[in-house]
Amino acid sequence: MERIQGYQFAIDLNDNGMTRSLRALRDEAKLLRSAMQANFAEVRSGEGIMAAYANKIEDAKRAIEGQRAYIERLKKEQDGLDLSTDKGRQAYVKYENQINTAKRAIASLEAQEQRATNSLNTHRSGVLQLREAVESSRRVNENYVTQLEAEGRKYAAQQAKLKGLIDVRKKMGDQLNAEKGLLSQVEQTSGKTSKAYQEQAVRVAELSTKYVQNEKAIRESNLKTLNMSDTMVKFRDKISSAGDVAKNAFSKIKEHAIIATGAVAGFGKFAIDGANKASEVSSQYKVIYNNLVTGGESAVEATKKVKEMQEDGAKYSIKYGVSQKEVADGYLELVKRGYSSSQALGAMNTELQGAIASGDDFNDVVKVASGTLEAFGMNAKSTTEMTKNTKVAVNELAYTADTTATDFHGIGKAMEYVGTTSHQAGFKLSETSAALGTLSKQNIDADKALVKLAA
Image (cartoon, rainbow, N blue to C red):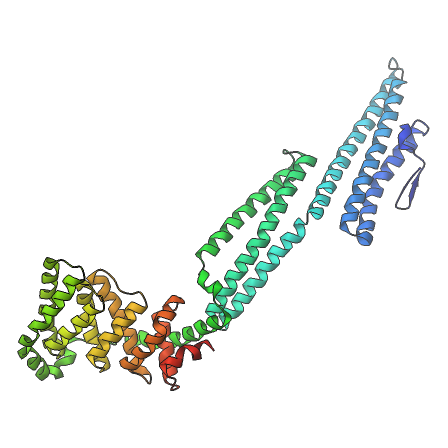
């Protein structure tokens, strides 16, 4: 006797229905099939989804056996018919239709058993939980990053985003392994040609693509941000905020430190005096030449570049109202700092402009700008690139000096403490300069600036 969730059947599936009437076999086979659906809902609500699928597999097997018993009995009935009579032939066709109906029922039951088996394997593999874990981690991280960005904490947001990508990658890797294992199980239970296998194969392929995309996103992220301490992240966000304030103001006067020739007309008297004293600098250029040759430049190249420096010095003396001796001193300072002749030529014009625009001492401008370029890795080999980088550095430093409680000398002192460290930590010159200027308004000394910012 079989009992299925409250239903009791007289059929003994092992006797192939020999002791039962054909009608009873048919009714009980139908009842076994309908009971399978009712049992699934009942077990699911009581014992859970995995128990429901396991029970459905067993119910499907019993229902299939019931249909097979019914078919066997129909075939036996066919065997006993007299096919020489119309009545016998009609009965045979009737039984054959019933056999085909039962076979279709078996095919349906086998498909349901297979789907239940695949579903049970899915739950047992933990794939569903892993899918949810990946999606949940992604949503939580995206919301957190959005919150940090809304608060203006862009570096904290970058760090959170990168940590989230790495967390998702780990969970996605676990999911991918489980999905591949499930694909193998589906192959065994349903075969490679089945719809279930094809659907799972597509899922594995799509997840593999997402995993690769996640890896790429991690590689393209700033890994330095990930390894920074919370203190350094706060530091970056503070100087970034200060930098944004300066940037907004600076955008209105992009060429603040770069002035037109006509703007220095008031320096005419000084320009003439500078030009008249040009002969005093010849020995200085000899020293520059010797330093360049000692530094590795060829005599031919050094001679050519020193000549250009002399020509520029005479031109700058008239244009900016500084003595050629000061210009020569500036070139010598740059060369002593390790600048090539091309780098020195590329930097000089902008540093002179910065001195006039800011009103600071030219020697201070040269030292501060040159030291800053070195600290932030902005030295370039070509004259054109050096000119461009020097203009950027002088503009930013000049603006900070002009709009805060500091000057080129003061900001240069601060850069001695924080320039190289800031650059190594990945901070931009504009961020560091703006932050130092902001701190100067609070009367914070340069040597305490980094500690204050990181607090």
